[in-house]
Length: 100
Image (tube, rainbow, N blue to C red):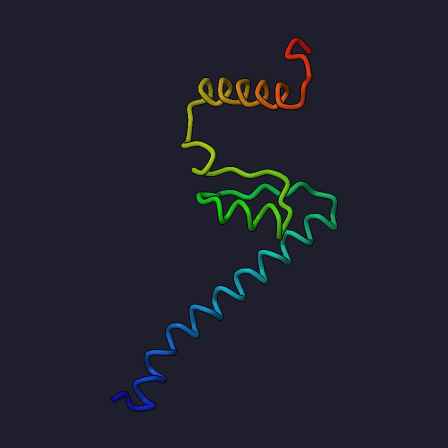
């Protein structure tokens, strides 16, 4: 049987984690809203999971994303090749002639 002191002690780290998460998300939301209000584009850096991408894309409506979800760090030449390939795929998906 647990005493109420045990329950309070074991609950405290969870409460701290929840509070930290709340304030972290609140700060993120405020920063993104400020940038959008100032007509700035918002780039979310460090996106590593689909859940993060979904949250930042749908909830906070960031304009661009970068991070390991999309690619590991690349040398300039490899990045330019990747960018060319992605642009070609996007044009093809939109039905635009790739010769444009």
